[in-house]
Length: 150
Ligand SMILES: CC(C)(COP(=O)(O)OP(=O)(O)OC[C@H]1O[C@@H](n2cnc3c(N)ncnc32)[C@H](O)[C@@H]1OP(=O)(O)O)[C@@H](O)C(=O)NCCC(=O)NCCS
Image 1 (spheres, rainbow, N blue to C red):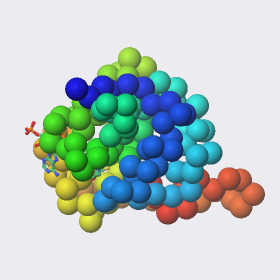
Image 2: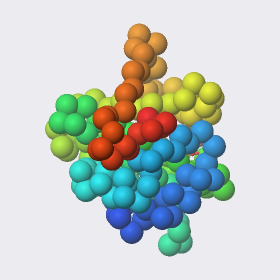
Image 3: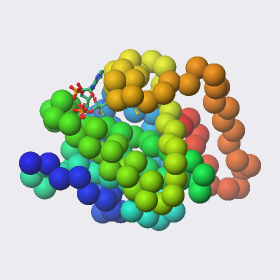
Image 4: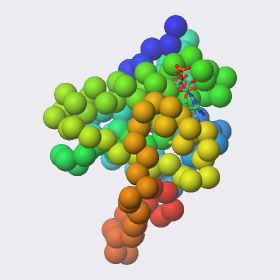
């Protein structure tokens, strides 16, 4: 029986390993151990992992800016899919956002990630064709966290 629990700094290495083996993941310098530690510290108690027999088999990075929530890197080990873990990870993150007073959550999906797009649509998320995402690196000298990924 899998367990959904808060993601800790000690989960980072196993999460990185899962993402390296997950199709559709856009990894960037924000996904270094340093970047992920900073993300977890900035958003305490919001990200989740799925554990099965002591092994990390799923992740959902979750944060907010005081107005809207964001989800990143929702991923389940290919051998453990279709058992409700993806849904449980997302639901637990949304509950944590609601408890923090956040009323709405966004996420990015690559247009090429057909499986990911189908999952979010199946789960009832609203696909936004009325928006375009713009991105920009911050000035040199500051740690670049988002070189290529969302
Ligand atoms: C997307 C992903 C997280 C789903 O994880 P999962 O644990 O298999 O999902 P669940 O078992 O919780 O599925 C929940 C529901 O979504 C449906 N679903 C899951 N994957 C789906 C897909 N690719 N297309 C359509 N529906 C899907 C399931 O059938 C289930 O619906 P049901 O209860 O009505 O049968 C997993 O396939 C994955 O890691 N994919 C690669 C990474 C990725 O693309 N992440 C999302 C983009 S950021």
